[in-house]
Image (cartoon, rainbow, N blue to C red; front, side):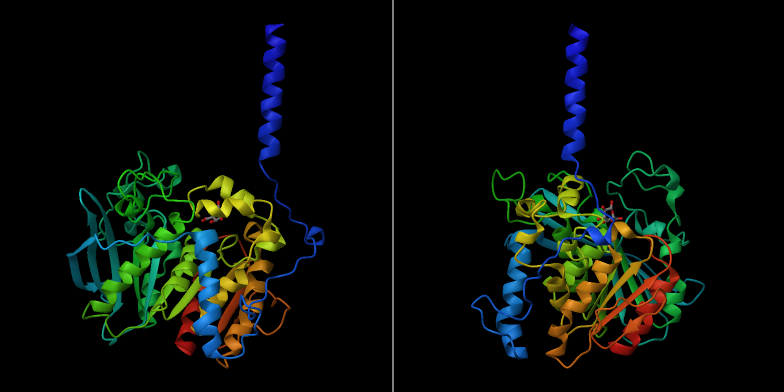
Length: 423
Ligand code: GTR
């Protein structure tokens, strides 16, 4: 009898787990008709017809919606203390092609602090090169075969294939992610690149006692309020702090800055570009749900799926839209439009169906009217281009390449060509 009731209880539990885990749809035909909220009609119902209407009213309204309902607000504080330390420099890095600088930005509030370690390569003999600002997933030392790159002391997710155990960066993971970071090619093309391990700003786990959030807590606060920032907004905040320093530093103070990110860091890249207009261009590589992909298509990853798998990424308010994408007062085309008139690039990969390549493209298409206000061309056709046929108009760039969810040299080649043309 006891064992039968145990069996029934187990079955009920399994059924519950199965039904509470929302399933992804991959069938384009099964997408229900949807209506996107209008990009260029402001809250009072007036049509946005010029740059002034956009900049003074509509852009602010849209930004406030994303802040309130999705990414969360950064609490106000003037208590943070910043200190900068130069850790290391060389004028002969990457086979003599680059200048390397490593520095740390420490932010402290009372006893609490975080330390953001930045690796910067600049091309030699190029005055004020444009600089990519980027995050990496496993530590600066994983991005390049360069023994001088320092290890981060921050918590890192374990990854057996990369030799990361006990949540620590060690020599075993040096250079394991070089395929995503063609550093030499980047400097040869006259660009600089700054990269930071994202966990230096906020470790990617559902724990609000670590990372930057606690530095902003009021007395007795233990987690952000429902409309306050999740991890993605924290990473965006960190990118802006790196930018503060690069804009002051004598070697980059006249440079242009391109925010780049892949996947979850592509979402962070878009939010960084939306929140901080000092980024001169923004790149989203395979950013998918919560990034460039339209939420209302509900294909591949959805709002409910992302919120259950990564409850710490967004503000708690975003849970209101689990399975109710039609209630969102915005969609992701409006996030792309927040970059206007700055060049923005959306990249997809053909096999990355989880990220909804078509939805990533359509966001760019439906964001295009904001660029038209500035006489810039976005993605005028609703027809997604063929694989490996990039579009590099003045406002919005797009490509879909063959292959999986990843960052390839092909992606970087497009970004550099697009930025060279449009920055
Ligand atoms: C996946 C997640 C995606 C994407 C990806 C990544 O597991 O569902 O939204 O962000 O991770 O960052 O690699």
